[in-house]
Every structure is written in structure tokens, then in C-alpha cells.
Image (cartoon, rainbow, N blue to C red; front, side, top):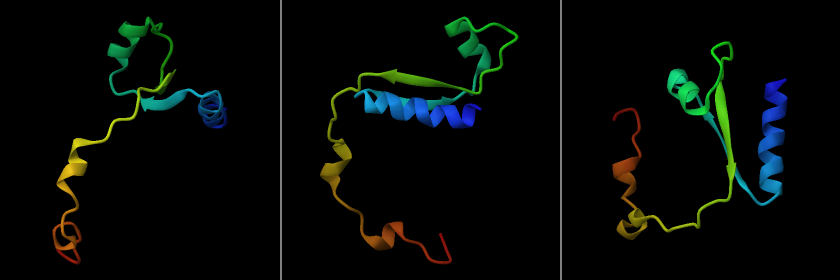
Length: 77
């Protein structure tokens, strides 16, 4: 059921002009404490929904592209 519901939730949020994303849970106890989740509930992840921050150009764009020989490897590292 969740597998069918989650994409609909994410798409509906974006359709309303919001940003949305799914985050897998790595620290259940930390999340449990933060959100007050009862001990008998086992979360598999959380969905964040809200207004997106303004886009910012990455500082790494100024350095340009690396030569292909530095990033493409064939049969070796």
C-alpha cells in the first residue's frame, strides 16, 4: 500500500508548487525522539514537504569540466 501511496503524495506536493522528498530512516531512535513516534511504530522513512529554497549555482561550476581521461576508466581504475 505504501509503495503505491508514496509517489502519489510526492507528485501531489509538487503539483501544488511545493518541494517534496523521501528520506530513508537510518537512526530510528533519533527520529523517534525528534518526532515523538511511539515505540510500537516502525518507520521506514519520512517525507519532507515544504517550500523550496531558491536555487543557487554550485561553486564547483567555476572549475569547469575535467578531461575525459580523468573520469572515464575502461577495465581499470
